[in-house]
Length: 349
Image (cartoon, rainbow, N blue to C red; front, side):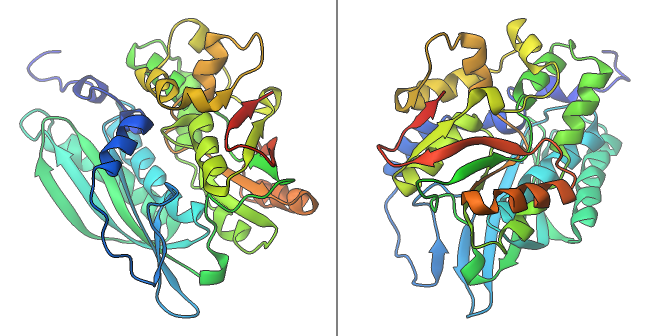
């Protein structure tokens, strides 16, 4: 890097994307030490099951969804970074079955390190995704920070009877995953400059694809639970689903889609630190089959930035669920497991 050449965005962050999340066990400990506050009757969804967003009933026809998400760069291209961060933040509204209505920008930038045009490109990337989602960025907050940080507060609306929580799954339900896994692995390879152009395009395609099927899935009574797979990996968010409903989540690992090249890159050592922290946090509640090696475990716990929806639905509507994903352009969506009665654990078979 010369005096006239700005640094790589990923070189300024100690972790990228949803891999920046505080480990689940540490987060639980922090929240456990936080005194409880009065909960208004209108608050339909709070922090009780680690759901994707808060939901507040406004009236008999409308409930307000509120969420926020932000992180450090996962890619070096500023426009792509903005797009990924915005897509990821908006996803939580879709994961509750809602329609986003507006966003607020959250911006922390090292203004003495990054040229203003690069910071502007990050914001333009976020604006492009909000435009695609049909919402304005109606305000926000900016600070001068050591590491680049970008994200959104997002508000949405949903009918109170169509809120899709992560805690509603029932024994007999099938699990449908909307996007392939492997974003964390590809991002680790990118940071070490070992990801080729085709791999980068695959990564950008999946992380900038809005989880719009959530709005249509909310219309189906047979969809009993919905969440999105992000920083805690498939295992972590599947386990949240298990604990929320008091059921056993069974994953058919051979059916889980992976981004092309993810397994090979993981085998070459391109694994995020967040994957190991995830396993250390919740591995005691996960049953793995014999012969399930460290590479497969890393993929199971791989932090997904702007990952796919995970839906639990009655078997009789699974074709309709897959059809909704297909109409929205999610060709990789597939059945990856089922819900069984039993202790709240995640079981991989």
